[in-house]
Image 1 (cartoon, rainbow, N blue to C red):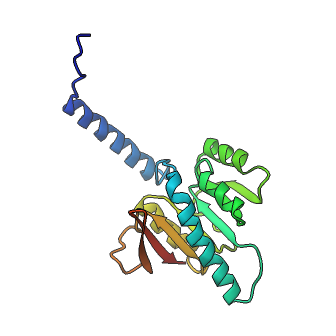
Image 2 (spheres, rainbow, N blue to C red):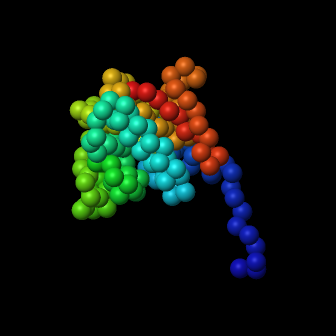
Image 3 (cartoon, helix red, strand yellow):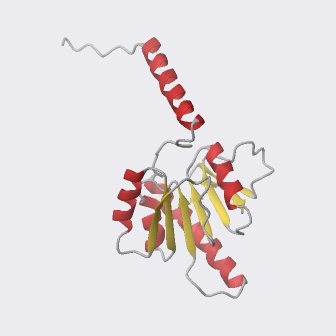
Length: 186
């Protein structure tokens, strides 16, 4: 091989990116996935869940309620964050559109106080939640806000604000380990 490094063909790479982008746009146009599956990085899980847990428990106590807080994660993927939430003491509802990822999540959540639901975040609405976490693209975050409006719970969105949010929709923007976390009130 002579020790030569592989050469990157930028035109081919550009064509490949364009094909993938168009494929994703087509999927979205026909009601498919709003966000590709990208798991939350492990180093972010604990700080995010600590914030959500403190918010949920504080809100329950302020209303004089002493019940287990309910954690909801739309687009939960393989259930990595959801399983940690359940281990932390949340009753956990894990929603995933992809049946294979939902099956992985259900296996991971087996034995914990949790449920996995195969469904679309644009239409699935739990009756009650105390904390919501999403690692989704802006359009999906906006649909989630629209679907869950009125549930009176905090939503933390990692990295992405809701579509069209120019600072007027979110209640706060936090920096957690050099990442943006948008806090919404449902």
